[in-house]
Image (tube, rainbow, N blue to C red; front, side):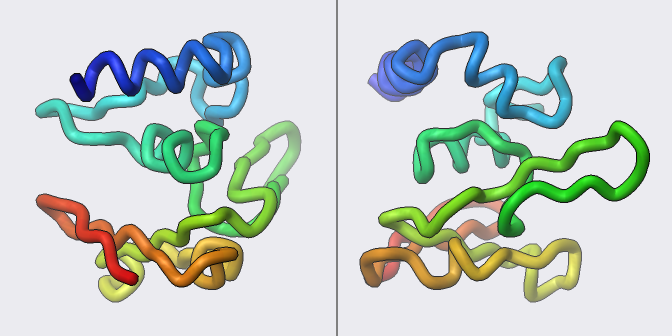
Length: 113
């Protein structure tokens, strides 16, 4: 069931567009041990498989482009990794259109509303 849902979402977006959303063209939607990649989480929540959770697109140096969330999604996303200071979630994910958030931890996801 879940595999078919992910395939449906990826095909609806289009494989070339899904791959083009990612910062690394060799990235996969699942990481080691079958866990969701950040790209898959972003695809499910925003419709784009971008690699980051910050707002907008950053160009830190030269030709390097880091794509983030482009607008406020319907459902937000928060992660334990921010509390551990590994990354910073952007304002778009913190202030979604509806008061619903997916909370990511090291081993599972929780929906809070």
